[in-house]
Length: 89
Image 1 (tube, rainbow, N blue to C red):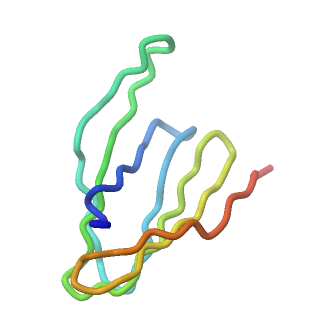
Image 2: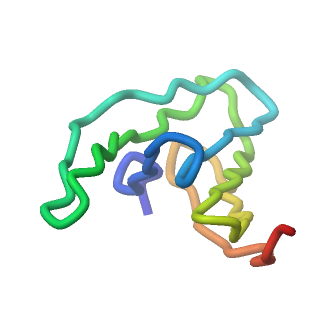
């Protein structure tokens, strides 16, 4: 799986993500989506690994729920793995 095929979302403090890597990565803005019922604006991002990255860990937060996922690999072809899901207090 190419890591650029994964999408990550941001909507204020309710939905966000953080990226950790062994080499600097670039989060690129793709588009904004407005939810029709609540008119909440959601920003969509992709992640481009650094030239020498071997691993990336993405922490996603969604309304108090935390999801950790890892992307690891060589030659910018990264395998996606879900590490943990938890509910924060």
